[in-house]
Image (cartoon, rainbow, N blue to C red; front, side, top):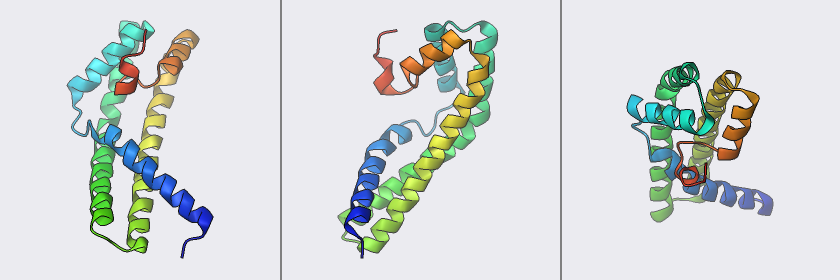
Length: 147
């Protein structure tokens, strides 16, 4: 049986997972062209040199497969959780699936963080500050911010 605090944490984790996963899942098949346009957007927004843009492109290319697999796993777990919730699965099963989904999202976040850590040394202090203010250049919520 869940304690009141654990139940609240579980509810928050589940809501976060269900809300966060579509953003991750939206680009599971991202290929080289998408990452290239992301590095090109970074070039424009941050004023990257051609060399910096190429190095960022290489980082995206190197990390693409891990990001793709993470997105697929998150999407699958999210669909399974939705199915369990809608078909009346028991609380223990839903809790286990929620924990699995939370772990997958955490791993995806670790991959994104590692990518940022690889990109950071390539940038000047001014470029890092701009990037921090802009957020993630490939996500929809940042796309419409003024540059």
